[in-house]
Length: 374
Ligand SMILES: [Zn+2]
Ligand SMILES: [Zn+2]
Image 1 (cartoon, rainbow, N blue to C red):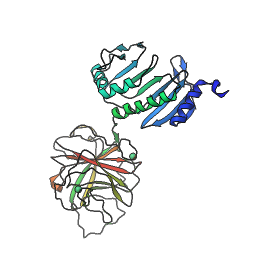
Image 2: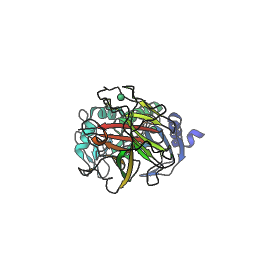
Image 3: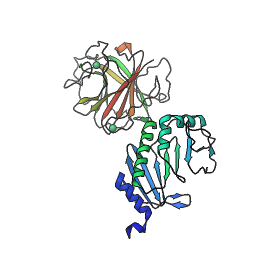
Image 4: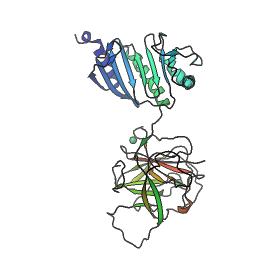
């Protein structure tokens, strides 16, 4: 009989039927046990690997990332393993056994567990003896012992709430090299230019269907148009020839970025929060030439005070805390592409001496811009 042949296979197919994912034969070893089947699946942003070795299965979530340097394990049987030491009062209201290694930050761990929502989720997992939940700064692992699909379903939902509340986006770079963006003098419009020649520009306007600000209903301001065919650029391809950095200089920018979908033919706002209009900039900025200069040192944070902070590639110089936008189409963290700072020489202002940051999701062809200031 199929079901008696392998109980591990039974649990694997139960999970795969319910949540999707393919069953693979597997020989990973877990202490004294060998995994026979594993299921790799995606559930609510979590990339999960479920290893089954009856009567247990282990769920590994490897795309988890938090800044706190913690490693702890919750183990109802109270059997700490190896070098793990019990942590007193990791939870505010409950006596749940938590173990950690003294090499990790115990204060950060307590803060993490005492967060009332984290506490609630961990309690609601209702882990029995022999079940273990282990959390570190880069993954979540949960050892379970259940073939009750209702219980498994409930636990997947709790894990996903825990994951999505705590998971921080990791900064992904569009280009390791960074290029200083040098904005030159206004262009002479009387000279006809060859469209095939590589050229980066600041300002100007799109002739057909310029994208509009949802707040003030005026065309958005074009700050940079980068020609991705420039052979000097060692960045990823974005699926179109030009990369546009666009914002509305007239409207207040709330905490939500301005998201723009791009293609060869059009640019379209797909998400923008309402804000107040308080500036009255001209409809478009004077068109100027942009030169990109490879900057050997600016991938490091904290550029010298006098240097321009207009740049493409590398990592962002945050004014406030790190802020990585999530793509509204695929829910994944976006990649940093460029930043432009307040620059009175070319009439751009981002709040009080602020910086405008641009991020991209190449897969969904979405660009996000937002600013930070003092
Ligand atoms: Zn506007
Ligand atoms: Zn996306």
